[in-house]
Length: 180
Image (cartoon, rainbow, N blue to C red):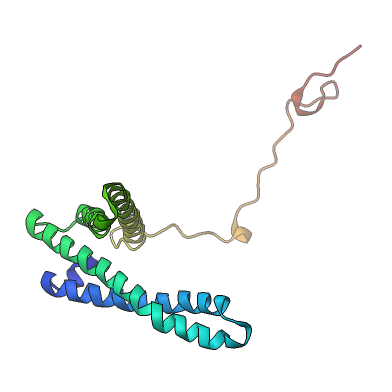
C-alpha cells in the first residue's frame, strides 16, 4: 500500500537520498556529540562536542545519502526490469548496494557486505509483511463481529457435581487406600 503513495521512480531517488542524508546527519549529530563529550578535556566538553558534530556528522549524512541513493537507484532499475514492485526488489537492491559500496575493500569484504545488506533488507521486508497481515486481519470489514462477552453476574450458577467415586475406603483423587 505504501508503494502507491510514493513518488515515481526518477524523483524517488532524489527523495530517498535527501531523506537518508537528513537521517544520517541527525543520527550522526547525536552519536558524535556523545563521543565528543566523552573524549574532550574536563573543561572543554561543550567545545569538544560541537567540534565532533561539526566535523563528523555531515560525513555520516553523506554516507547515508550514498547508501540511500544507490539503494533507490537499484530498486528503480529492478522495477523497470521486472515490471513489478515486490519485496524481492528491495532485498536484491540491499544486497547489490552493500556489495557495490564495499567494492574498494576487496572481494571478501564485498561479499560480506552484500550478504549483510541482503539479510537486513530481508528482515525489514519480513517485518513489514507480518505487520501488514496482522493489521489487515485486525481491520477486515468482512470479518464477523466478535461475540459479546457476558456479564459474569448474569451467568447461571454451576450445577452441583456429586462426588461419585469417593468413599471412605479410597484415598484422595480416587487412589485406593492400602489396607494392611
